[in-house]
Length: 378
Image 1 (cartoon, one colour):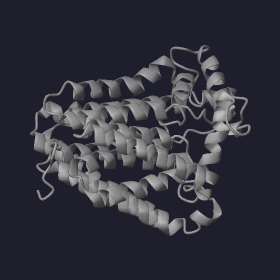
Image 2: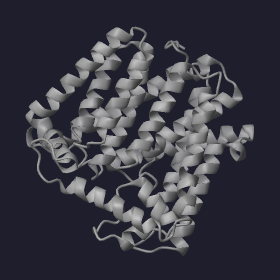
Image 3: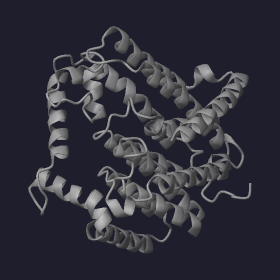
């Protein structure tokens, strides 16, 4: 992991320096909505963390790294979408990242299929973070499967999907549903697509509940969640599901004590009876700590960027479909995780939509943004 992190750090510095140099040449930095958004929310979090800290410590260094790497990822994604043949280059980046993920999985989880270990315990310590990252990657891979019709890419997608399932994160199911929706919407033969999707759903259910390894890490947890929420199935009491629901209820109650500007950094942790330092829900965390002002500052610019993409004539129908899908999944996934203080991969759907909206503004060609059938030789 140290080698992987060091390589990532070097890559971020190299990419960031190149992207910043180009942006300075074009004098665009000050008019980039995404950069303004990242700086604004980092300034908000840091102001609260320094002046209104209610519990523990404020990790300003981690948040600053997130802000800087977020700017780097945004500028790089925007430049890929702008470039001639940018769609093909974006595709190559996705394949390379997928290969890196699979190498890490094979190298770090050799005993995974035999011990019932949830993938992510030795990668980040948080299986839900790994699951969300792999789920986000699967969305973009699903889009490119429909664009390229590449059988090799289908194999990569299936491997990434299997790795996501092995994290045991129930939130991964939301990403899988979005994958199928993207494929259905972009398919030309709807009857064939619907048939394959139904088959994929039945096959996934069979594998999750009938394969011992997948049942251990995911199937049994789904049963417990259904039993806890709906009282159905063979499951048992689920502390994970019960605690998350309790924290959301507790956090929303505390929000009304300071509705406009919140109770301060880590206010939820200071009042919670569950013993966690965060609520496991981004909406609750923002409302408790920063109030309605913080919630609006975080989400309103993302929805604005999505509206710009939807209204853009240069963006293809398939890219608009992808943009809507990633934002919807982003909003749904935030009910079960705290995004604002997470790794930058959690921000990527928002950064991608910002980059796409900015590309629309400059009015680049359909090929530069990733056409319906991009030329992979370019």
